Image (tube, rainbow over all chains, first blue to last red; front, side, top):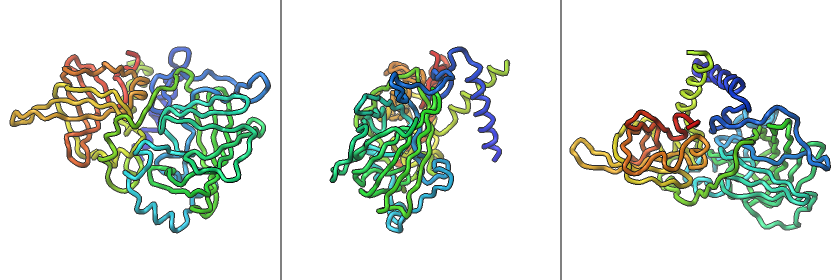
Length: 258
Length: 132
């Protein structure tokens, strides 16, 4: 408890330090120190009035340690696995996590690396710096194919609900894990993401996960992304020198062993 | 010490001591945080690569035998944003390194703090002074 209080006090002091530092404002964003922060301001719009989500963002995914952590769930939401899924999670090993082999973390697994949204009239793209160095494409006002080929990121279509971008995705394969603990899913997975830029520097992201093949009921994760106006995406080719995989051992669990 | 300066120091201490929440794998599945190492040696190789940068040092054990150790760092994209440069550590440098050894007890560890003879320091995640 004492440690928590100390951390809370330090976090507050750090936030104040960031606010009091030189202009323009800088502060820590995730793992990154002394980063340029977005100035205060309203969420921007494109010339035609469409909300402008473009930019480099950090965060916003669900807990990559454990998707069932209440901190990454919408209040009232609960992760209830079907018996086979619960049994599978009990036996999964860390080295089996596709992400440990530099394969995608899928949706909505969080990552410590920035990502960028690019908006065009017909396609929106999400460019991931890491985990893995890849991209998603969202077909605006499109239609899902009748029989999509199962893929890591599925088939995504988007539309605007007021100021919220709604992305509907089906056609997933069953390979990625929702988190380090190994929460699974099936090809029946259907996700609905809601992206709302709440001001210039912040975006809320809610993801409803509906997979009747693995979960007794849908659940919704919540995340908050922060704009990183002072950085560009950097290269992260995870396959280059992955010395870790053969050294991983033990049950699937979070970064700190939880 | 002025309050703001104290706050800055406190923040850097706090951030340096935390467990890095780094993907792409569980750190606890690879390293044993109870198996601490503290070694001094000469850098033989640096791999500025993903998903992790690595550097290797030759360390003399008590019998005089030279053993090569492999230390893991965060990925270059994280390090660069936190004040590291690809030449921050170079072959030939003498460094003292703390870290957590791999669970398999090989000469492989996750780097904690790296101290140079002139006293400047780097760590797994960041340069001591990111402004430099």
